Length: 99
Image 1 (cartoon, rainbow, N blue to C red):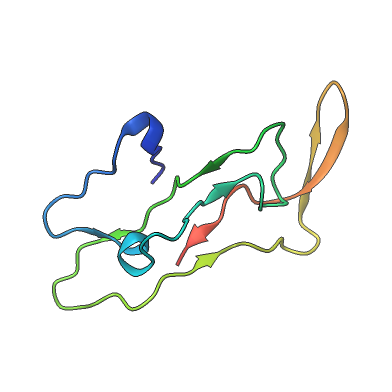
Image 2 (cartoon, rainbow, N blue to C red):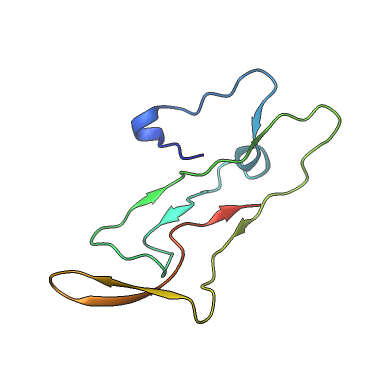
């Protein structure tokens, strides 16, 4: 799910639902789209957003941990981005995932 707090407002959690990231890592930055730290992205400006959420409603279970995955490029996998100014070869992945 893509959600932009600046455009969409605070994420609406209904009764009994929790955001696993904020529950288990309160106050910790959870940017899943980050042109500063994700070398697989390119951009003219820094863009850091928390687009992906992991929300859950658990009655008989309790969440234990959440991790950011997909932070490393897959060796040998890339794409070519051509612009009028230059050609760039980038590793393939545009955002990190939560697991």
